[in-house]
Length: 259
Ligand SMILES: C[S@@+](CC[C@H](N)C(=O)[O-])C[C@H]1O[C@@H](n2cnc3c(N)ncnc32)[C@H](O)[C@@H]1O
Image 1 (tube, protein in one colour):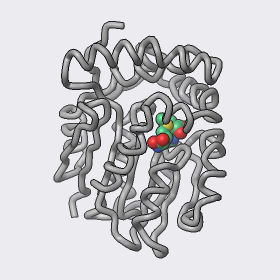
Image 2 (tube, protein in one colour):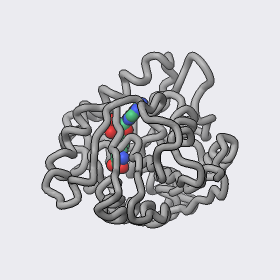
Image 3 (spheres, protein in one colour):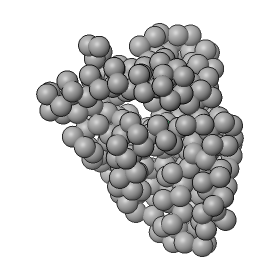
Image 4 (cartoon, helix red, strand yellow):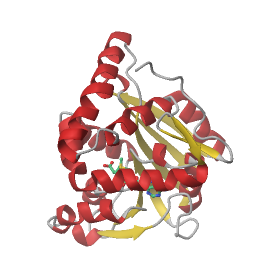
């Protein structure tokens, strides 16, 4: 259960981390895809149960921090079942557009009924593809979001570089990702919860203990908020700032592509 120190966002080159396992970079995508195939049908329910509903609050805060305007075009990378897209759609008005971009068909399919029932559905489109090679033109979006997705990429930096490429000059990035509590006693409790209770809940709800060991392991292996800020600045984002949520269980970063 001992948390492992944060690593670089990814290994350069041939290996990557899948949770605590070091795997061939070429294999990580398949492992991640299998993981989301396993959890897709119950993804929303599990998120709500395991976070005691807090993920809704985190997502609302994150979208608020992005400062969307009516008419904005937004790319929701690793958009999954579309929670962030729905929140963004409310803010961009009827002239705005949101594209949910995700590699996993099962995750997109799991979110479709929820979106189809919403009056905001006409503002939302879907694209299936790899976040490390976005099939979108340069300088085409006013904002890009990624929620709980970036740590799943084989090379997260490539995902951020791609988001930077497709943003218009002056466009805004928002990254919402899990992190770790700052208070040590709370971190201890959170470790206990996430390494024992989460996998057990995974076993009961989706029939896989392993699916929910990947989650806490991948969180422990991901960059700390300050490290992530430095990566974003290196890629070319300016005015980068972050906010810890719920004592650091999650963190929101925002930044701007230099106008
Ligand atoms: C934890 S879910 C987050 C879903 C949603 N953003 C949310 O906040 O609830 C991560 C998503 O990232 C997607 N994903 C993982 N690797 C990806 C990649 N290389 N390209 C695009 N999407 C990817 C998964 O399919 C999954 O839907």
